[in-house]
Image 1: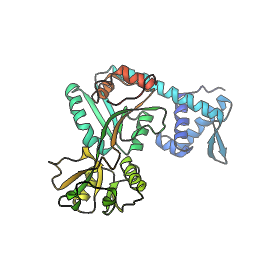
Image 2: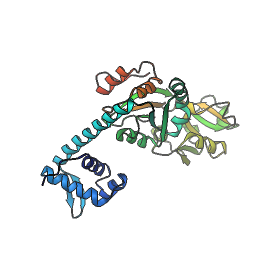
Image 3: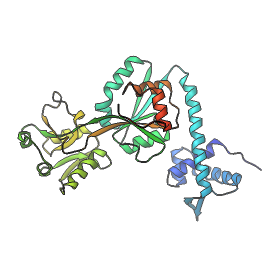
Image 4: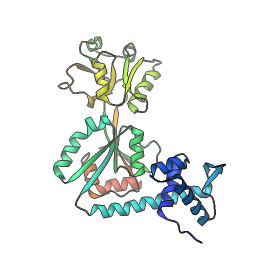
Amino acid sequence: MEYPVNLSQLRYITEIAQRNLSISEAAAALHTSQSGVSKQLRLLEEELGFAIFRRSRSRLHSITSEGQRVLAYARNALEQISNIRAVGAAGKAATVITVATSHTQARYVLPSIMRRFAARFPRVRASLLHGDPGQTAERVLSGEADIGVSTEGTHGRKELVALQYRAFQRVVIVPRGHPLLGVQHVTLKMLARFPLVAYEPKFAGHREVVRTFASARLKPRLIVSAVDADVIKTYVEQGLGIAVLSEVTFDPARDGALGAIPAGHLFPPARTNILLHRRRYLHRHAYEFIQMFAPTWTPAYVQSLANGSIARRNA
């Protein structure tokens, strides 16, 4: 008896590959049973006439060469089906833009964009998914988010394209009355004398700051790490240490208990990128949202960029 290939089977094998070849994790992510996933995998391999995954006892340990090709086709098929559904959804009255981003981008970069977008399209809802930069990229890759807003680029992920929005200079955040506020030209050596409050290592804001100190053969004492700028500033205000943040996170009127020292001569700028999936369909309002960042980012420009026919450029 022949069992034709079905969409569930394609979802199962792509999820298994994404979950480090764990059938149990794939089943949990898809809200189904492990036995059901195993059965459908077996039926698919029987239909194809070859193994997609290599097995060691009862576990999967690698992907066969034929399996690699099948997975590539399966991912493409699922993407195209998702695009077809998105085309249908675009014609309905209610529209949702899902944006994956970090706390810092949502708090300091996106508010003006969201305000202008809401004023122009009051019936379109924008949904924010908060996470770290790695989660932002994965959510765009998986289709959970239409757009990503992140300090990170594509990091070699060929399915993604990054639109470079803005570069923000870094500043050293200190409590009011701190001795560094009286220094005309701060140096890395001066900064290394004070405890450092920083982002967690998975954030570019942590890695770039630590890398800059290391290039000068300095190692500041990291005393607290956090996932967003507001928490970092709170600990600086409490006197635990100093911090190196993007200038966009500091507002003299709001942060009255803190001071900001320009540090663009010491650290690379913090960049904000818009992440998109090259092959995924974007409805009209998603393109409108992207164009809020830069008028030159027209749908035609974005599509040409995704197709690789033009080089990236800043807004």
